[in-house]
Image 1 (tube, rainbow, N blue to C red):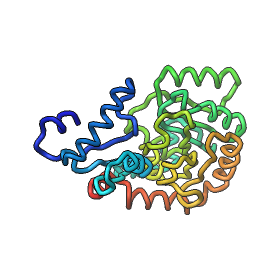
Image 2 (tube, one colour; image 1 turned 90 degrees about the vertical axis):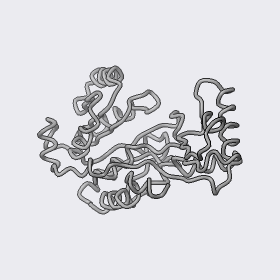
Image 3 (cartoon, rainbow, N blue to C red; image 1 turned 90 degrees about the horizontal axis):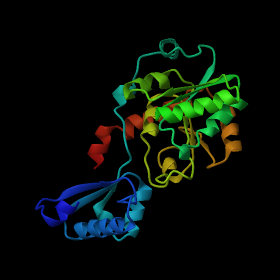
Length: 271
């Protein structure tokens, strides 16, 4: 951005994933805000791509003209998730229970993700099996120790896995958990990749209904949305999701939507 402002004779497309442009120092963040607005005003930045409509609205309120802004959510390489493996095959390969309802979370295991909520679900639903895919491995081990302390036998922490293995875990599942908390610093502006991966997996998605998540997911249409930071509603909606496992309406809607709107190819075309 600094190069574009000072030296470049070409117009650039600049993409933002957050309203904060520098995490470490407020003074630098303020400077980069000024620099971005000046670069747009001088015509050096032709288009500002924002990863959500909420983020696009933020920059509009910062004074960047609406006709310079494009809102474009993240996307997916859908072929990667068009696995031909059946649920039975995926479970056999991953050594997962064959006769249990499996609910899976994939993603980072940071404290602000409130992974403890999944431990609570495991204790409330002993008939189901919970798979938590992701790292850092040290955090996965920490949560595994917590599960062992309360004698949970129906939860597995895989630790970090290769990204190309994620489709197999999703294929082995019945329900996919897209869970966050209000403590996630980017939650009001983000476009999580897992949303689109989950949609491509053709499974029931259970997701917290943050505003940017609702830009993609619609309750009872392509997902089940949970009240923010409400463990009781999470338990209630998981009960509903279990009852809908054999209903293909919601998963097919999600798949059709991601196929039609959220591939990387579609994203490039829209920008």
